[in-house]
Length: 339
Image 1 (cartoon, helix red, strand yellow):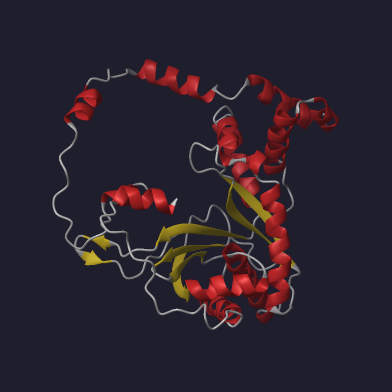
Image 2 (cartoon, helix red, strand yellow):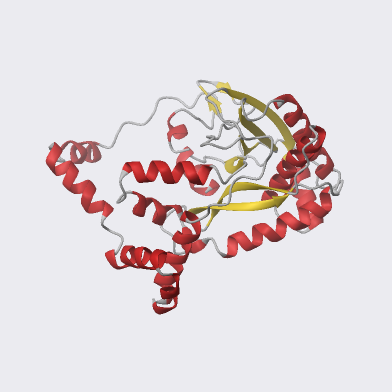
């Protein structure tokens, strides 16, 4: 997203970029160049910022879980979060999506932001609840139509754990068993909403930042095996990317649609949503060896979104292109607001 600031504009012809601040340029040029030894020393120093006591406690608790009651509350939360993320070993649930390959297929669809927001309000949840419900509804229908019904599938989603004290964005990767048995979509919505609320309540202590810090101190071969084993526990991945509510331009051309592409990372498919100008642009990245009928999956996802949209009050539907940019808003100011 930060990279997109370099080529996205808020006007069709924004004019030349302002000159660089001379003081900043001079300051950047005055930074001494590090040789390889200094760079390695700095990297190792950064990786040691997590207190060694926490790492020892992770090691000790993994070997003897009864010790978790003997550590401090804040450290205990971190340790518990790390263990929860790293110790999941239950395999993925799909009887169909068992093969993996390097073959990829990209599909897209669009849905009204206002319809999804209205449906979420009516059903007592959030936009994320609508999104995951639609994905689970489609995944369950896909299995039933191919003669392999399944009660639940495991999905992953990045959940924000940012607070007023956070220095920046903070996320944790939540893995959830979502219901995929045959049921009305409003019942599935209620079940998914409970699952999401439970995931959020336990998310703060198992942030990706903490896990990444621990990972940086573990041999690459171990991390590779761990990543592979964790990917085998997830059937499909979801992600909701905050987009723009104002028109965007690229090289003078107005951006009409903006479809995100999420990484697979060993799952059957990744469905990623991005809001833009009153619409939710949805991109599906599919492993063709896992999902043998991708067109069917996309059609079922569209049907699921339409079923949810039927719960939106008429007043929620809107032909508006979204909120207008504030007069004189700069790219950097808009980005801060969108976060």
